[in-house]
Image 1 (tube, rainbow, N blue to C red):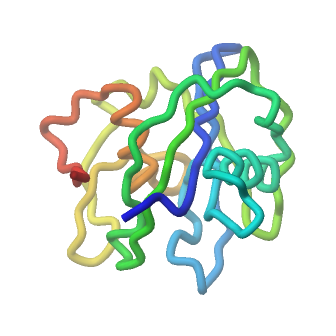
Image 2: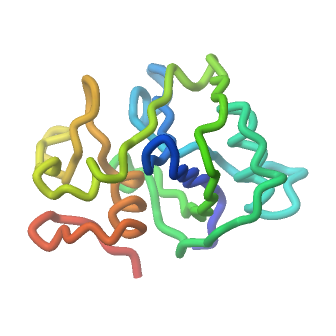
Length: 173
């Protein structure tokens, strides 16, 4: 399955090493409603490639223009949406910024954002396995009133090389 969507991993070093997460707006028609996610979305007609999709979607959702920022890395594509039976192949792109840029959320899709402290995520003591859906246990990191789990968790665990040998993670081929 070829990637049909792209996400931006926006990592800043100051004031602390952190990664931008958005919180999807609650919507009964959205299976990822209320979840923490990386900015990004699906490829659309008019996008020349998935990097442009990533830049466009990030700008629409957060107001951050990555078009002038060099890509620091391209992770291997991963599948999102398997738990809700709506799989889509997603291409993650990594961007480093020196400091946190202003974030202006697109309120129709995004209800908020947070800067995930990398030190918090890599600390195994902050990880647990919970039932995120009926009969579906997954590794999570509790944040605010919900969990970081699923695709976003998997991308960050792989990027940050979190030793999750004791935690179940679906592996793509």
